[in-house]
Length: 404
Image 1 (cartoon, rainbow, N blue to C red):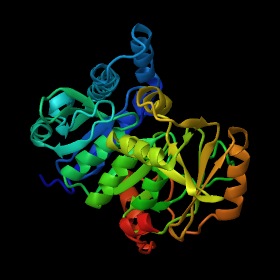
Image 2: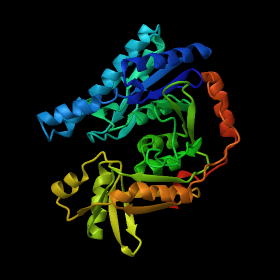
Image 3: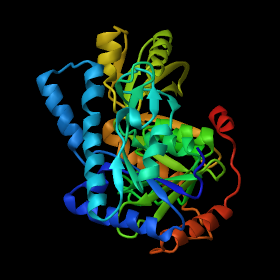
Image 4: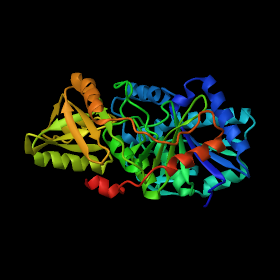
């Protein structure tokens, strides 16, 4: 199904709907977008659950049963995103927009049954295409999918709305996907830890994947990998005020020096053979992990589970009975502008200070001669985006970067 020029795919994170009042400007933005673009334009809007709702459902579930099956988690937690989609569609209808929701099998994201982190197998767009014939906007709950073999509801995992949006945009042959959040783009470091961190106007997909896998609170790494595979441009925008563009991700682009302190990382030590087997088991269930070599002993490495979304001690030590020790250290990574990566393990109390030191040493704010003016209309914004892209030069392809 080819939709270039007639379809936009937008994703709004949960902070976009922190209160009832937040719905109004977003619905106005979407309505304005439809009015300004010529022709019979349509929008697929992927939304996360309103802030805190998924965690509220999780807390209730765990209060009833501290160890529910993964199947129950997949059946229950995506309901928060479904409710968010219903709220947004209702607000759009009230604003005079023809809108509806697509749920479950209608979404067309087909997965395996790796519950809580289901892996995408295929994307079927027939049901969405039929809805787009009748409505201007289709609102889709992020992270929600269905098993290819049984049709049961599956969940792509925590913070996987990015993956939903990217997968649908790629399948519908869009040129880009727009990601809206309270942070307008990707920074050189977490600005809550390093006040001097600056917004990066552009970034290659390969670097965003490495940043995400290293624990950065940026786009979902499986989502960016999917965008890389399909050469899909990702446009990160603010979800408030003028909805300005912050960072544009392209396959070709300049690497930028960044520092990623992962306060949620879980670090394990043990026999190297056990470390390797444990890493393979985590990778088999799509849990992000890294092996960090000991600079003082090339035969020693640490297993680091990043992003903090998985109870690795329970899975590896209590469940699999691996003879591993959970260390009280945290991962900090530096991605340099040549694509190389440095990693350190530091005590939690030193993480922030070390991040500031590394940022001062490695990160210099880049100069890009073309800037987007604030307050542009959506069509003018696209022109500004094209101009911004014109000044970027090619970077190494993803596989070369991974091998560096």
